Image (cartoon, rainbow, N blue to C red; front, side, top):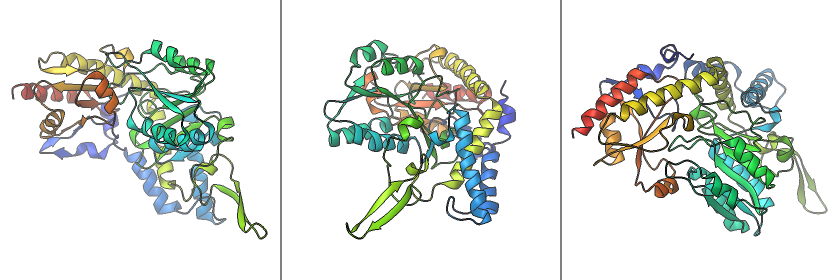
Length: 411
């Protein structure tokens, strides 16, 4: 089992005090803290191996290239992809979704086509589809959610049709922590001839994700939510799909040849192999190495242990929060249906007021829409406060959180 007290020793920031109180970090759905193993791996790269990749024959470039390509391999293993070529490094899940929207949807879809989303999606899994739909004329439709925030599977089955070319859905809601049944959704999508895109930003860091067992066509996730640095993320795609796609951006690295034709007065271009055709320009080499260190850290902990630790902590927190009279909790109370994310409100207080009150005692939480306004609208909420857990959080921190909430109820 995961020992959070041992894990905490690897995170220097947790030794901080905020407003003269020990730091309690409950904003992990927004971004996670970084262990010294990740920080040291990135520092070592800049101190010993810094050079551009795929550019030169000198020693430093060869070392940097080897590390960067190994990072792709380790990430592929982490999600059980068949090939390292199926792993594209991007800036984050947002860029990964935009890559598919512009490289695939913009070229493949037309006025008779549809994409299905759900009302629980993060804005990053809404805006790119809405923007490209206005260019190409395809329709974006939204599957409803139930009153507890869970997906309405009957509505999904009713809405999908031969016009549906892709179902694009979050694995875990960043607001309610609801876990969607990806295997079930994949079966529905594929039986209707549609592809499945999964926003794994809130699942890959916290639970086992096997792209082959789940039969996922495309998967996006971000490094900074899984102990890695900001500015690095992953798009996984089945190799046969990626090979048929055009590049998202143009520039260096993503080309094989650029040849000037005197007769035509222009250049002819051929693309590089997958995944490099989708990684234009100098990539975030150090970020990729930091992500590899984060993946190895999680692998050493055991992702099943991570998941169970968070589930136990969530169950304990929900029980403690239910003791309070002015607290309103959203999402299913059944912990088998959710991850370590708990949205709530305090009667009579705005969510930002709740967050500021807790900050006075060194407790960091999120407040607002959490980049998911349609879900808040569907649930009739103006905003919510949100606590979210990770590998270094403890029951003692939860008890302190409850203690401060009790004080807040007296305001």
